Amino acid sequence: MDSLTFGAINIVVMAVVMWNIPLQFIPLMIWLERKGAAIIQDRIGPLRANIFGIRLFGLLHTIADAIKLLFKEDIIPNHVHRLYYVMAPFWSMTVALVPLMLIPIASPLQIGAHLFRFQVADYSSGLVLLFAITGLGVYGTFFAGWASNNKYSLLGSLRSSAQMISYELGMGLAIVAVLMAYQEISVSSIVEKQSGMMKLFHWVVPLPNWGIFLNPVAFVVFLVSAFAETNRTPFDLVEGESEIVAGYHTEYSSMKFALFFMAEYAHMVVASIVMATLFLGGYQIPYVTTEQLRHNSHYALCAILIIIALLCLIAGIIVYKRAKAYGMSFAEKLGKKEYFVISYLLFAAALMSIFLVPLVVQMRFAALPSQIIVAALQMMALFGKAMIFLWLYVHVRWTLPRFRYDQLMNLGWKILFPVSLLNIAITGIVISFT
Amino acid sequence: MVKIVRRPHLAGMRKLYVVEILGGLLTTLAHVLRNLFFPEKLPTVFYPENRKAIPAAYRGRHRLMKREDGSPRCTACMLCATSCPAFCIHIQAGEADDPFKEKYPVDFTIDLLRCVFCGLCVEACPLDAIRMDVPLVSFAGYRREDVILTKEILLQHENADYAHAPGYNPHRPLSVTHGVHYINFLKNIK
Ligand code: SF4
Ligand code: SF4
Image 1 (cartoon, each protein chain N blue to C red):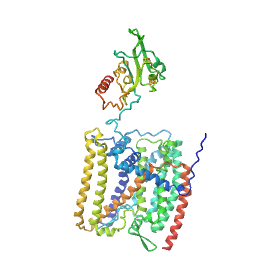
Image 2: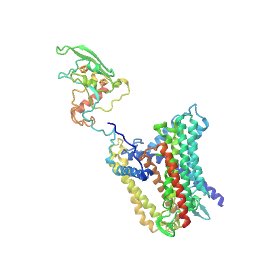
Image 3: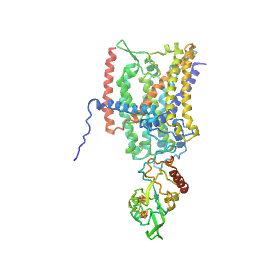
Image 4: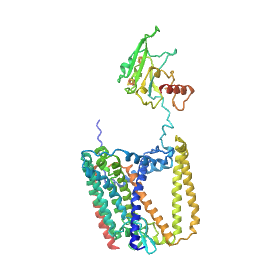
């Protein structure tokens, strides 16, 4: 196989995978949002949808919602601008899905003479392109607001545009500081730079060489701006229901509304993965480099097994507690046993993975399998880090009230903007002395 | 006296929001961890399967009380119908044979669709003939006739002492009589 064909296959495979990552995360995120809201507010959350009594912790509600929205009548009001009206949800969704194409999710595999990248496009100025694409997201909201021909929609999209412009500034300047710290602009080399230990003025600091430790101020600014960019609480003035009905999607129904909804979650997933990539070392495992991992791939596999065991154990405890607390109250026959069965399965899986660890430690892997194992571990690391941010989105949404419009603008222009400017200056000074 | 509440002056670190936001996040995190690992402490009741006991002072659906001889206590004095702000009590009075009471209700209908559950009819009745303590939390129906109470339905309760049976729960009856009344009542309303 020549390298061109291999490259083409690589790109197609990775494009399909990367396209699917946010799409698979969306139902999970909707579930997490509902359950997170419930659990923060001392409730139980959605639990009633079931198939023959199997409830799956309310995961089926997402499917029920999707079916409902798909079969609802798709109304296009008479007073809208048809082209922009139809285009807006698709625009939002597409723009939300594209930026992931520039993010590497594991270090490349060496297959024979070829290099299989876990990244669609290893573009040399990838970071700039990434933010250019993310910045297009505001057009989806704006088209929707303009085309709806409705004052509330227009107000919502107006707020959205103003907010995006204000926060894009802080975000861009935060990125400038990060770029200065890494001295790199391609996303894959930024991730590679974040392996190993942190060095400051030639001293080794006992911290991983991650952006969050290199440049904490930029991280905070970026985090706040990312919340504003995705229009999430506390910056969700765009759809402030108490003031402007539902904002830009007031006139939308059925699957077009669902697309906006999904685009918001896709945006969150992308923003989380970008933040994990830029500030939490991407797919890097703290303290060890990819080379070290590949030479000790049996330990990497052990680490995967131990992580699976721990996750299964915690999930098992949570499910078992629920089975005891309210499993018996379910009316259906299967429902009474379901939670017990699931928790026992989880405990069994945890035990299995623990028993496999001593076997795996004695194994030695060839070059390619060990690379694949390391890649799997790195993907787990990246998505684990992204999950932290995704949970933070949910957690913040159900903790903080919405900002007032002037507070929002003050925060953007009077705090984040100067802080990130100052941060650039300080970063420059530090870099010039090292 | 007028009390003026001034806007709290935010200064220093509080103005940066960071500390305040972290404090708020910690509060909700405590809830998350408690509810994740101790779900039995959640107050939620799985409603159709489990039901909470109905409190003694519950103002529920109407019923009519009976005398010892089984005839309705009501003398069709019309006080309840007059005091009803929704005009939903319809009484048709008839002359009674008993020399001590002039009238009795031939027909006594309460249109629950119009009733606002104010309880004024109970307040107005001089004979304690009408009460609103039927321990039912859900009495919706599929047809209008299901929620228009006739005299027969109102009189089905055999003077059961609902109000003084604290914690009365129709699904876990405290005594046999309560259960029987409730089951009879359900049979008849359908
Ligand atoms: S509760 Fe109020 S509205 Fe209902 S019947 Fe009695 S007086 Fe009328
Ligand atoms: S006030 Fe009492 S006695 Fe008079 S009509 Fe109403 S229920 Fe009967």
